[in-house]
Amino acid sequence: MRTSLLRSGVNRGPGLLTYGLLLLLAALSFFPFYWMFVVASNDTSVINDIPPRLVPGDRFMDNIRTVFGNVPFGRALINSAIVATVAAVAQTFFSALAGYSFAKLRFKGRNVLFVIIIATMMVPLQLGVVPQFLLISRLGWVNDLRALIVPATVSAFGVFWMRQAVQAAVPDELIQASKVDGAGTFRTFRSIVLPAVRPQAAVLALFAFMGLWNDFFWPLVVLNRQDSFTVQVALRQVQEQAYVTDYGVQMAGTVVGTVPLFIVFLIFGKQIVGGIMEGAIKG
Image (cartoon, rainbow, N blue to C red):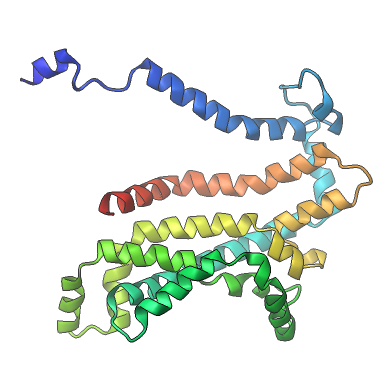
């Protein structure tokens, strides 16, 4: 039976056309990063070449030295790493805790409160900048990394994501069994819920890390001292210090600022895909 199915082509794997299409899409996705490196390794005149230059030059290290010489870029990398790591871990934990509460705990006003949290996702970020800045200023956190970390410790999307994950991964019977065994609410969350939603929590943490690393608007508002700059604000400062935009230097800084994201994705990329696919299958 199996032989006849194989001969009829039912179990045929992907053909050359499929692999060719995937390679083409991969090349198109990778090309902007390659072009960024080409510009970063040449002087700024390469951007106007016709036909465009597709071969890297020999000025990459010179442009890198210019970036680190114009602004404390190394400090900016450290600041971004601290903000993105601490805030991503905190956001994952508190979002998972809130998601568990909305998914499995019964309390008055639960549905109304959840709808309000989801509704905040429709409010543009810019509308809250002035009151949030006034609050940060009163706390004395201007030019302080706490101004970036504390507001990002929880997000409406994170609460929604983890609520859905808990509902799909943790049956009510398991929660009831833990109560019968004498486990409290937090112990149940720590020992049962968190291990069950680990793939989805990893996805949220990585998305939060990337979003915080790439954030530009809010750090630009609250940071104006060079030793407190994050990567994106430091890149803007590099551009402002020149009378004419030096695209080679700008792209060199962008390459350096993008490398940590590539490293994180290469290390944890399987967890991102696995967590998304697991949530899709359970959903």
